[in-house]
Image (cartoon, rainbow, N blue to C red; front, side, top):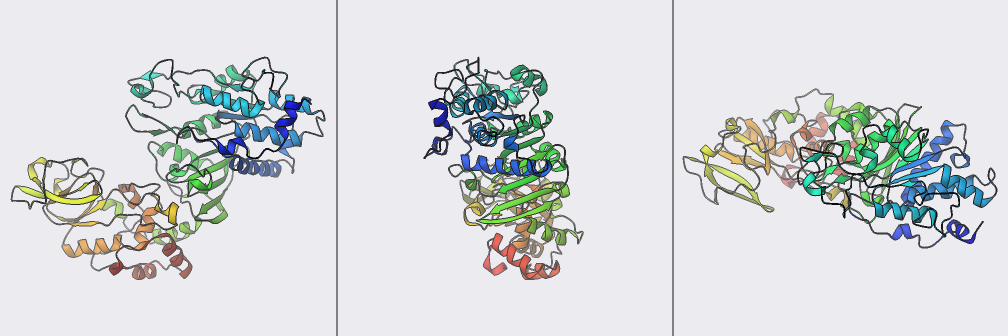
Length: 531
């Protein structure tokens, strides 16, 4: 074995891939330690399905990273195979050549990351370079494929990834971010073009880009990681493992169809969820946390779920992923939810308006701040920055939900807590509600709960939404900061004739001392006089 190849097999400290900075929040480099957690899960499951056989001692298994960035998955797979195949292929150079030419493949997401991946895998940005540890390639790319791919524009957006033409149709000198793996109608045929028509991968593993700037043809970012998962499933590998944001479990823009597909696919046999993404990626903040999964093509069944929260590991537990329309991350919460839902009560969601309840945007400014309304006006509740303000505006401007103007109601802040639970382990979940008197309206900053019959009813609802239990039930459907109507679905309607406390609610639903303690550890008090 030559000196360069020998060098690649020695442990190095520090590992450069532990030090490399992320390109952006949508192209997050995977730390080697985390990549190896995923590979350990794969190896354990492979052994369980194959009579305790060692996947790293199998010279026929083919691996694909369809979204390689730093090349860490390819490198760590290769490192394990070099050790595992020693008895089968004793000559080190022959073993390295076999692994790199016949077992390990990648698709670069940009030209830069494809060069980086080749450098990690081959010790050379060119697979045929003089310092490359592989000696049998005839192409500079080796098995790390990259070619510039263009978006397919239609009505201002890409038909494959939803990218906005205005944002990414920017000439030949800049990256298109049209990732080849998800810009194909027939992914099996596309893989054949890249690696040969008979190519079938046993394992697909990777960390896809998370979002596309200007997604949907607008100015907002749109998730795309789900597209990588869906394409990988279409390739029908024996095993699929990817690390993706956890926001898909209960929310995320445009992720409803993906969530339904994922939860109903009983081939997902392992799901490891980190509420704080820094437990996986120490240098990156990802709202809602991060998770990885293992999909097992030939062995459908229950999913083994493990949840990491605030330094504690919950599970593994055997889970039915599609028990609900969203995924409840903590198994302990599921048991509480069952008790509440068993009462069969009307969901509070039915009292809550949709977004922008009176048709007034957040930045609406045509009102007299701190003014009292006259007979032709209504009182307006709005926000300026983070400050709550009130004023008077013309009644005739409002044409949406006018039936809610002259009744009692509650204004529910759309902006709840953000990543408070990730940082401290407890969460307030909701901002404090505001009682809205007859003759009042609000901007898009709020939702409306109503109509209510009196101030007494409004105060009853206010007290209820300040309880830990009500906010806990909202939190189960709330993946990030904003609170929408559907997140109140599991909050049951109560009789609005009393001031509600947690003591009363815990007794009503028969919660155990352990369940009460769990809720109290999860949800921070709001309004001490209501607790």
